[in-house]
Length: 60
Image: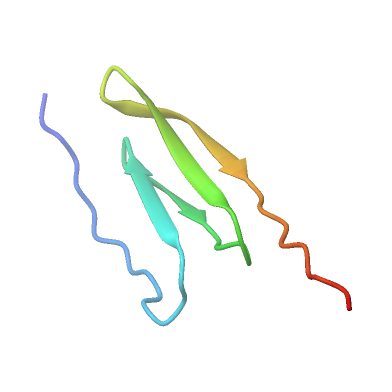
């Protein structure tokens, strides 16, 4: 059994993260504030947890 490979193009002028798994590209768009955590299982991405941070501005 031979593995098929392909070449895909991505837009490097856009900010973000790309997860490549089993030949499928999954783009993650950036958020204004927050944190992304990648959960791995047996060497593959199982989930991406996205947390959002909300900045509280002081009032005078």
